[in-house]
Amino acid sequence: LAQGVLFRLRLLTPQAMAPKRSAGASSQGPKAKVARKEVPVDPVDQAVGAVLSAIKRCGVQEEQQRLLVETCPIALRTLASNRHLFAAQVFGWAQQLLAEYGSAVAEKDAKAKSVVGAVDDRRSEAAKVKGAAEATVADCQAKLSTAKEARHQAQEELKARSAEL
Image (cartoon, rainbow, N blue to C red; front, side):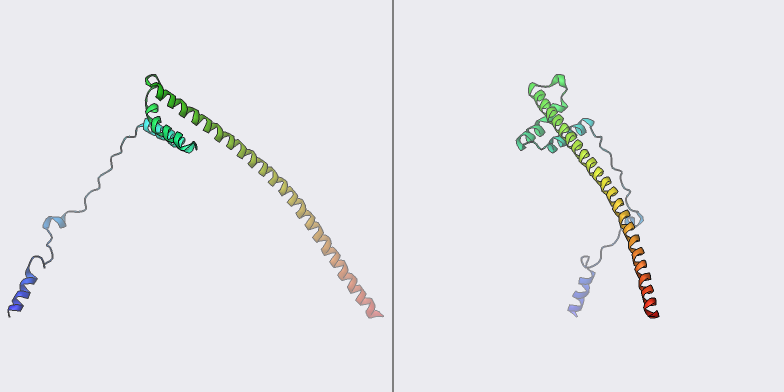
């Protein structure tokens, strides 16, 4: 009897029972989503980021790249009249590097376009040769079918004459 009472008491303890829902929780719907506030983007920061990513793509030595990436933001954010001598020098280096990189990219682009033009010319020449070859093949096939027909007629004529003899 004592064991049965203890068993029933354990079932009725708050730890064993499921938690009750509060009355307010079921009547409330899902929370409304809060719109994200757009953080204003500084155009100078965007421009500095674009210059730094261009410097990273230039393919200069690691030390030079690190120097420019670390010092360029200061030089780019400072007005030309307020730049220190070193900041002006860094700005000049970056400007020279990007100008050289731009001319190298333009040169590669021109070479690529000339290669594409040459390939297109060869492709058109090959298409002309292919067209002429296909016309020759068609002519040869027509001659072949005419020759086969003439041979067939000659064989039929030979059979007819040999049957007469």
